[in-house]
Image 1: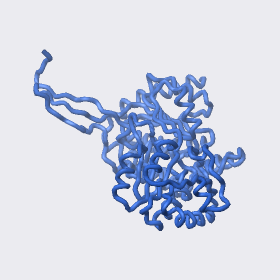
Image 2: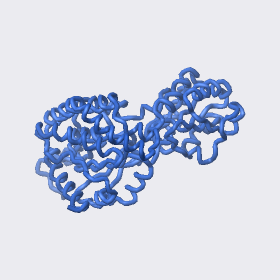
Image 3: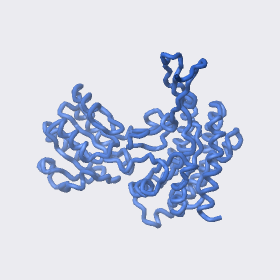
Length: 418
């Protein structure tokens, strides 16, 4: 079969499977999720062996440390995949939930009910744990899923998908509810993106290049975020020890992910005290700083930030630093250079915290916490299917509710329209 025929058959099977998945009871879906989690742990050695093939190939290709970090299935990542599946199983099932109900003057009872979207196509790079996260969330929300990972993680993805499919087969879930596109050819992606009659939503996860390619070629609605240019603003009233912990964690804990801080904004009143301390910690961690003119006056010997640094997603141990006059300049900078992803303020000033929460227009806004918490698992969603900065139909980390839509339901008693 040609690539076109293979992809069409997968989509056709997924469409048919989606009708059966939508009718599954919560008990069936939860049993399947728990079985999937158990099998992920039981087959950890098999998954690690497959992942090693991908890592070896990535090293030979000269992929960056950040990319290899995303690709690696450590014991912690495998445990996290299983834990995510179990947490999704424990969450309330959104399918069938009636979210509103009201009575019209003519006696009609009008409501809104959550229903599955249908068939979700996930196109992703590097992170093989996405295979388990996406499969679990789509199953619990009553959707069929088509998974198309990148060539760099083909062995890992196929191994994970095989484990998940086998677990589902014994629990009453339609066989084709979870499918992986078996080829890494780009033609497969292009064919997927044409199938608007079979696939209801596309969610790309990966670098900006992949996401823009998907958006430019898709006939199907796309939920996306292009990049994560995340900021931490250390306000004049901040607890500087707290600010130091947050600013360090947001940049250093895992620099190659989209919710890592890329620009540090510091109030001019405390910059002289705060920047030398955090600079020392960053230097010890190997972070390269690129500063504005005011930062350069305080920190001698660091690089000068260029205009392009303010909108850069480094995904590496590089950080842009800017001294600002106050909250308004900080929020103005975020509005101009941010990517609607995640922003944090460190402050003791309640009014400033509330203004920051209200006026910063990003999908996740935090007070006195690291940007690294912009993550579905960390926010109690069980796992996430991705992060949306599109505002329609979801905004921020996407969990179960974001994989449903709502239909109107109406109870009548013989009413007719005059």
